[in-house]
Length: 391
Image (tube, rainbow, N blue to C red; front, side, top):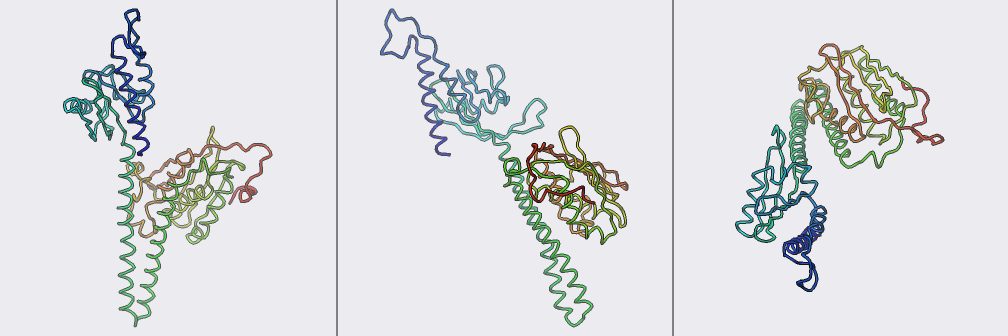
């Protein structure tokens, strides 16, 4: 950060010198002008190149408010329209710097035109170079602030979610101590404690999975993965849970499809979709996993015969800790993070996830990932050398 500031300061000194030099009549950069010397052309090309190289969004104002130069990033961002600033709030910062003769700094929250539905968080530095000339250095903090807000909400939600099972375990432990002389009550409270402990463990595991997704880049640290093998591992992991409820899992689709990424992330995404399908389906129904190639993508669709999701809820089900039915989630042990993990895995791999659902008819969640073409003669990783499709 200090190095960047030093580079900016050095560049500003050079810009100021070049612009001053360009503004001096007859200045050529030699020892001094003579009567026979022709007037030198303005030396603004070097200044413009320096402005283009400065970090962030850069605008040079003449006469306090007229834009004389702007970096391409500032123009693309919509800060400049012809020779004027788009936002009056930024112009006000420039006027303040011109009036005081010192650097003016402000953090602005602006609504972006034309519809003004998207907001911008900007840090504006207005630096006087000489009377009437102001250099604006503008940093876009919008994404940084959005990430900070998501992180704060995530920590607050995790804290809230952890309190529920921890509090329940504490109360059940007290009840267990009080019922020490009654074997039936002891067994009842012990079973309840195990259920709450499992719920707490699931929540912790999901939080760990979600945090890992933020630190791993599957497009740089991944490898070719067999879709057959990924689906087979996910199905195998949940086969006992499905059998316990009399639910049959069917897998179909062309074998041999490949994607590129991290195996454990892909297995986690498919496993979470299967776990939801099993948890929210009636007993003795079917869950289907269909794999297919579509254009340049591989699609893995998980279809159930469950309770379905109302259309009004479908836009929010991928949010962290969002639950359509909180009471049912407590029964099934859901944490509200499973679908958020699925979406993060898909987007980290260059894909996405979509949902189709009708209440009372079931749901279909479709994972879409870029198809990977395996070069001829390249062996698969050992864990991907499977035959056929998992059933």
